[in-house]
Image (tube, rainbow, N blue to C red; front, top):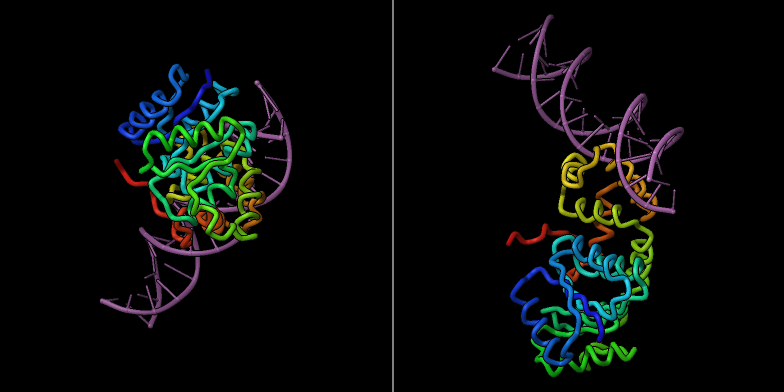
Length: 221
DNA sequence: TTGCAATCTTGCGTTTCAAA
DNA sequence: TTTGAAACGCAAGATTGCAA
């Protein structure tokens, strides 16, 4: 029986997705995470999982950057994006950033089963109009390439910079000293090829679902 | 009261080193 | 290689003291 990981911050949707998966794959082993940090721990705990079903926007993730980073850390793990965003451009970008599938949240269990089955067979699956959108730009591809170089801790720091956290606040949240955060920020700037945190945040923001250059804090539930 | 310079505080970034 | 820490310098804003 395959092992599937589900990452979504909405308990109700996780429950619905779990039910749909269990209907099409009776006996499947399921593990869940409600945010990016929990997802990293989950993937570390189940390195041989067969598939990850992942929401695009979760705590600790903005758009495609978590997908890009996760694919870099665990290239062997097939990822299927499950999202309420159904624009062809969003679906195409998810595929171009390494997802093997894209399932709209409006999909019924038959479609979910079809998509999961296809990806487990090693194929790619997405709604037909996903490929009608243009491929990601060379610029976006380059940004994704640079983000892959970040360590998990550096990625966390970058995400927190993106919501306007100060070094001191990040240090408190991560339980380390401010000096350590400064060192991480310096390493991030060097890897991304920028000169300050504002540029780093703007660069990461280019991988948001709506890359308008403005990075908004995650919604409070 | 206003303008200005000196000082202090805060935040950011770099370099270097150590431990795992 | 990654992570964490210390020491240091720089820049900008806030505060303070003083003369006009």
